[in-house]
Length: 164
Figure 1 (cartoon, rainbow, N blue to C red):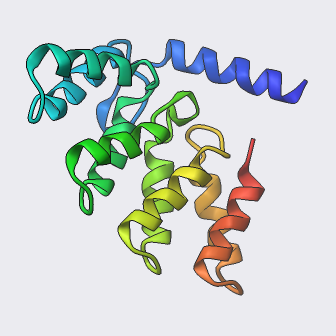
Figure 2 (figure 1 turned 90 degrees about the horizontal axis):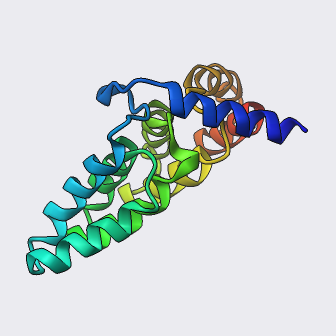
């Protein structure tokens, strides 16, 4: 029953939230923003029609373009733009909505001991386990755990304390 309430609340939040791009919240024109973003990337290497088809297909999997762009930037540091976009899409779906600040915080912690790719993957996987806008919870419990634990362990335990 708890999962149903969380899912319902998440859906309602995503449907009623009004967009602020810097906050990474869901926006009503999210799909068009995603298509525009992906099209620009695909159009560098493919013809216009194929690029548009690829962008439309990719964006069917995306619910939070701001989070997608964040992960794209991280992955694009070590990968070509097409591969980076393909990796980023995994972290831009339904469970990413409203988790821009969560992802930023997690990445900042993991990136202290790991390279950009590993940090992005770790942040992405852990981000999917916590509710939207849970950065306050994560920061609070990370600080407590980090007094006696290594940063990775402290973050993993904070995720467990704050998870759905």
